[in-house]
Image (cartoon, rainbow, N blue to C red; front, side, top):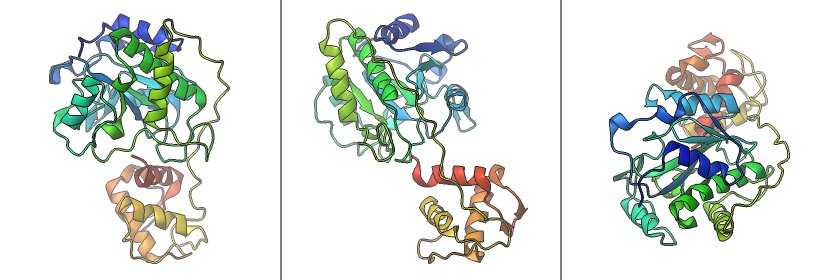
Length: 307
């Protein structure tokens, strides 16, 4: 346990590990401290954003949304490895998690116990980094981004005198969470795990002085899977099956409905349920015969396969 670093010391700790850092607006005073205590600090928590694009992801993590006000973390780590500082103080990132996990992180015990309870306020005790990734287990993590995650965490641990066991993932803290997840480097690459991140943090902390990170390659942008073509009102399409699978995974279509090539009445009803819950993604058509549209497909895919 330790008092929170000052905002200046926090930024310096990350920069000191060779990470590119930029402040967003008045980040040092943007927080949720009026909602509760912040500190003593117990560790660093890693998340994925379930978004694509740096500007959009940073704006969302800074401002939040109607049901979850920002900041949603302290720093956003983009795919190039740059850290965007969006807030400092209490932030809506960890939520309630397991007190046994908190005790283990505080004592730096390994392995962590299973996170089977949500009885402890994690926003008080953890620094949080949201990392730009769709979280669909398909969107790759560029090696430069993974290295920046480890270096940012190592910088904070070095400043506090913590070991790598003080770094955890959201999936290790709160029941039902899966972040961070996905392949490293390219689609189908080795899976990103917190064990790999902690191993790299441990290597970095073995050095008395921070080392210089390797020069990263330019990451390839991630694009969600193309939405099934031809899914407009009244049309038939041989690509309806992926839509039906996504609707089932997101809970808008009964799992017992058989897959079919056609964009038929049951599929239309599932899309209608999705649009009733998310009207901003309605593309065209009527409420009885809606189209999914590319924006709606991307949002549905996040709901079905994201965190």
